[in-house]
Length: 129
Image 1 (cartoon, rainbow, N blue to C red):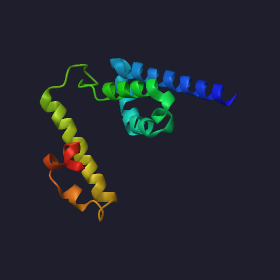
Image 2: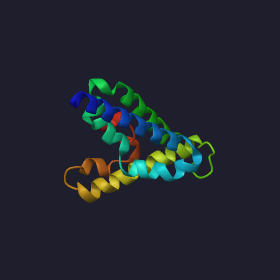
Image 3: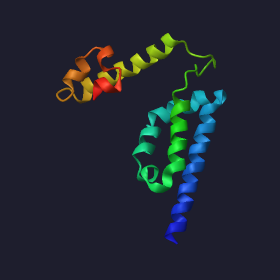
Image 4: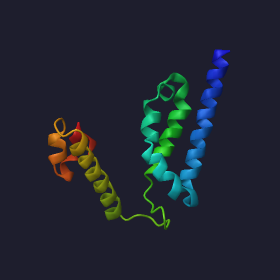
């Protein structure tokens, strides 16, 4: 009945996340799949879902962690070459700058301190909390 359906649903989700891992781990597909996965906030949606947070979601949590690892793997999508430390830092700062711009555009009154702060002061989780 319902329990069998829930198990099949969980199995389907696990296989789907495995497919995403396979697509992200191979360079020919990574360059096309990674922007879509990032744009759809795939990892954030998975982490916040009740299925992943539930008792039965242990394997699914591990798979989502693997997606996050491959999503942020330090490799240039087009060339397949390893990114230098400065390239990784530059990518990180560009994402934070974009986040600050969005905070300014959409949450001007609530996040004034955030979008006016320099990148160094908002670059780590500890400084944001």
